[in-house]
Every structure is written in C-alpha cells, then in structure tokens.
Amino acid sequence: MMKKIRAVLVVLLAGVSGLMAADQSQGKSTASIAAAQSKDAQSKEGSKKDSPVPAQDAAPAKDKADVHEFVMANFKTESGVLLPQARVVYGTFGHLNAARDNVVLLPSHYMADHNGYDFLMGPDRALDPGKLFLVATELFGNGHSSSPSNTPEPFHGPRFPVMTIRDNVEAVHRLLTEDLKITHLRAIVGFSMGAQQAFQWAVSYPAFADRIVATAGTAKTYPHGIVRLEGQIAAITADAAFQNGDYTAPPTKGLEAFATVWTAWLFSQEWWRKELWRQDSPPGTTFEQVLHNFRTNFIPGADANNLILQCRTWEKQDVGTTPGFNGDVEKALRSIKAPFLYMPSETDLYFPLGDARYEASFMSTVTLVPIPSLWGHTAGAGPNPADLKFLNEKIGKFLAGQ
Image (cartoon, rainbow, N blue to C red; front, side, top):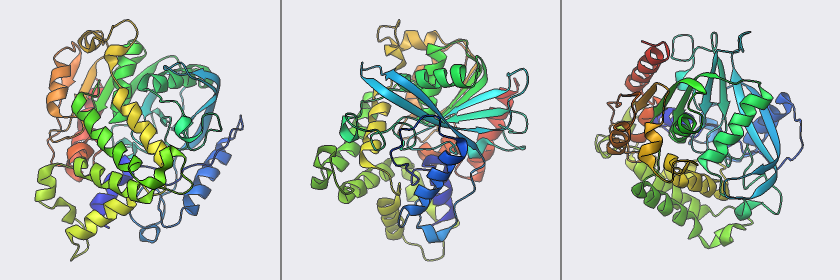
C-alpha cells in the first residue's frame, strides 16, 4: 500500500492492532506493559502496528516511549456507573525537570495509542523531548486503557459504560496530580478527539495549562457529526455476527462496512478526485486496490465494541454540558482563559471549518489558523510534508510565545 496512506494511518490509528488482553492486575511495570502490547501486536494474524497494510510490508517501529499504567479504584463515570477498577495507559517522552514545569500533555485521538503525536516530536519540531517532558495518554476504549474488550464482567463488552470526554479528562487529571505529582502544564496539544479533550481541559481546568492547541477537532460534536458516527456504528451492528455485542468471533462484514463508511469521510472530496493517494504509490496501483485495503485493513485487530465505545465518547462531547454551564456551549467557550491556538483543517468533513469559526467567535484568547490542505481530517496530523511543516511551524511559534 502507498507510503502516503501508511503515513496518515500511522498517526491516526497508532497502535490499534496491539490490543491488550484483559489484565486486571495493579502495579504492572512499564516493561511488562510494553512487552504485552508488543507481544499481542505480533500475534494478530495479518496485522501490522500503526498501519493499514499487511504485516509483511514493513517492520513495526520501535516504541520510543516509557509506557506506564495508572490504576484507579472505584472510578465513578459521568453516567453514574462505578467501575471497580479503571486503568489509563500512557507514554512519556523526555525527562521531567527539577522545577516540574516542562510538561506537555498529549491526549490521544480515536483508537490511538501513546505514539499518536510522533509528527510533532523531535529536536527540529514543535515538541522537543530533549527539552520537554511529554505525557501522551490513551483514551478509555482503545484496547489498552480500560475498554469493553479488557474489562471483566459485569462490564465486559457491550456492558462497558459509555465514557465521556470529561471522564477521560478527569482520569488524566488524577493521573497527573496523583501519579506524576504534576499540578501545572506548559501546554496541552490535541488532535481530533485529542482536540476535544484540549477544549474540555480549557473549560474544566482553565488555569491548569499555560497554552492550549487543538488541531482538527471542535469543542462540541454537532448533529451532523453524530449522524456520521451513528452511520458507522450501524454498519457494525447490522452484521448478524455482532450478536448485540456478545460476538464469539469478529463481525467481519460489519467491520468492513464500518471501514468503508469511515474512509469516505477521512479525506476531502478533492483529495479523492485528484487521486492524491497516488503520491509515492507503486506504479499501477488502482483505486480498487486502495479501497479494498481501506475496507479490509483500516484498523487491524480492533475490537468492535471498542470502536463503538469511542464513537459514543466522540458523540457526547459538548463543553456546554460541563457542570456550571447549563448546556450553554457559547458560555463555556467564553470562559476559556488560556491562550488557545485553534487549527481546523479547511477540508475536514468530521469537524468542518464553519463549526470552528462559530466556536472561535466566542473565545477571547483564540488564534484561529486554518490548515490549507486537501487532506481533509488527516491534515491535523501532518500526513504530508506541507501539512507537517505548517503544523510544526505554527505550533512551535505559539508554544514559544511568538
């Protein structure tokens, strides 16, 4: 499959083929978590970490993070469900300085792991692990943190509670303050569902971070986005093998239908018309081959209930429903105090530019910088050299106070 497509999915779907088996033990070591992820990823027949291509196309990249797990007893979700144990997996890059003031939080996006922000990391990029301590957290439902697939009864599979973005933010707030003893952040940088978390942090904890960056994501999921997500959920659940979530084998037809629907929204219409997937593709690659690969290898090894759970998390995000704002998204946006770099993609079909402009109009500290790209939603994760350069330059200058 094409290098461009691989680069995009490396960022967007990092680590989803390495879904962990259920493990409820507390105090698991960093090494054992990393080993478990690596072993499970290798065991997925025909899958490859971070890519929609078959495993033989490329070897998995070495994980550069130190991987950890934060375990919380009796975690109460926003819906009122009490989980006896909730786990958040996270990766750290770089070192915490003596003043503990060089921390940047990187909340993950849909079905991603802690490697989802590699596009911003490096000595010549916006986030230099040689100077910063980067904390990359994994959303509930990705198969590593607590998820339908790895939680025992009575919350296994379809009985796992819907987790909101606020649930995730509250869990990570506890992780930072209790586990890492960090009470302030230099910045929060989020892409997609990570951007949703960045907005929620800005509203729930307005003084916790000096600066906030959101790329390709909004403060609220508006009805059009919910309709899209419901279509993708319906594609999975329509498969008779789904069995209301109690399947004994993956609902393959449903998963392929899900992937096809998702793919239609991922890039812009012009991206498809101009056949930008041909960049760096082997000679003779056809559209039919591209579509087949997306349909059959979009998120290798991902569990259907996990996919649905994170769709529900995405659907429910609305900063207006934060306690104290009575459902008023405009009031919540006006409450944001931290300098905020808002970078929607001009061609995003998930989080349209119009929604971003609407939200930005209520934010007194915002700098709205649309990404001029044909790469749709993926532009927020630097899938090509032009987008990569644009993101790193703008984010780097913003974080430096320029």
